[in-house]
Length: 324
Image 1 (cartoon, rainbow, N blue to C red):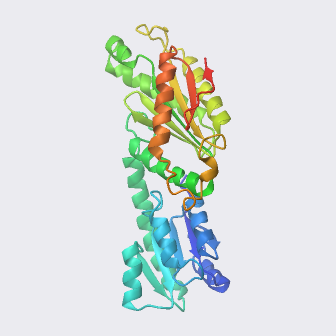
Image 2 (image 1 turned 180 degrees about the horizontal axis):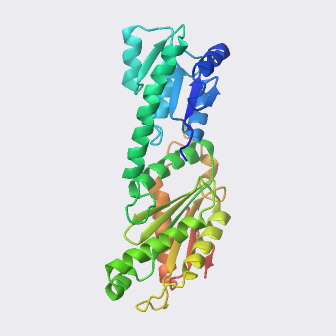
Image 3 (image 1 turned 135 degrees about the vertical axis):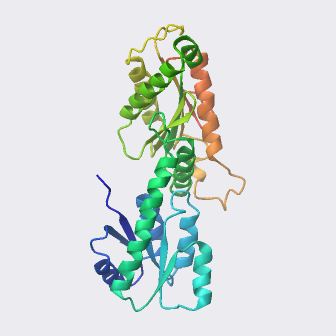
């Protein structure tokens, strides 16, 4: 079943929002914001398919909103149509330079608005389908490394902007090279597919993402998830893969198992209280690579502890638990 497109209307004039909503009725779900800050927050949360944006708004202009949205990897390709009473070439040039795809002048002509939005919406949905194919691992059907990188960057910006917890799991199949050598690469592919399916079953929230990280490695992104939630899911994954009862004669454990490294950035992490205050703490830096590095360190620790287990670390390097 195809999803219904989402259209975001941004204007400080409520009557204009009503006019646009009426013109676009039937094209998809319509959401709206009456100021720039709310528009950015709503767009990051809902990831609309088309954005109609008033160029002239107080506090945060439409141009500033456009610039903020284009900085996010998941919104970079979202078509933004400026709605403005100023149609001078310099205004249009400025908007197009920021990444807008079209300009519609006021007063609004409903039929023209609907026609232009239909065109941009059709193109956006076609591009989304191509991107989905490009971001899907052909063997397992999971998202691939490219999709993972884009999603992590998007979620990390949300962490830094809104002080939300975030967790990441890195895992790989224990002694997988031995598995390939013993059973052959075709059987190895079947093993990867079975593990991927089990991983996908472990993920219950639509906001979470499981991806093939590379080879026999996988990753799970857990937005708005603190350490306790990450620990529970890591153990659930270990138990789920073991319960598949896939024989692995070349493994010291006798069965196909996984090792999981979990890392979280939450209220217990060093630097949590500094989020949103870069001007007060100009030397404060946190990046996606920091979290990936901690998760990778935890994965190494799980392997060193005997495999078929999960190991957890906070981003500040404390190691409170080992799950057997």
